[in-house]
Image (cartoon, rainbow, N blue to C red; front, side, top):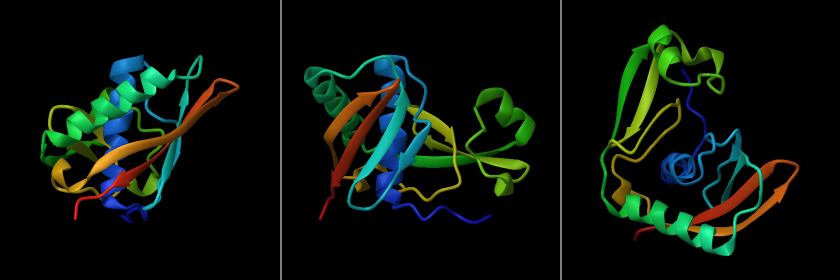
Length: 148
């Protein structure tokens, strides 16, 4: 199985951002994203733009989770079991019959084939650069201030 060409720090930060959006705003995980080492974006189905205060609170919560130095783990589930617990629609066909579930401690679990850090301490700080809203899509752009 080939891994996506994602930066492990950025990819793990995206998992935390997604779960934080779910918890704070009741949205689904991002339906589209573009993850790069320098900056990234996630698109969410949503009903409105976020206020400046909400963006600050979102960034603060993501960084609070990152600062907890949470170990990143994985487990493999048979496809049928994974399908009963997770949305597998974004996984490529080559993901196979044993589905890899990436876990950010007890904060987030998600089927994924990409690379991740081993602990949130490796991520650095997430900085939301901007967000916009159009036609039911909330886009959040962000970067990482990485540890030395």
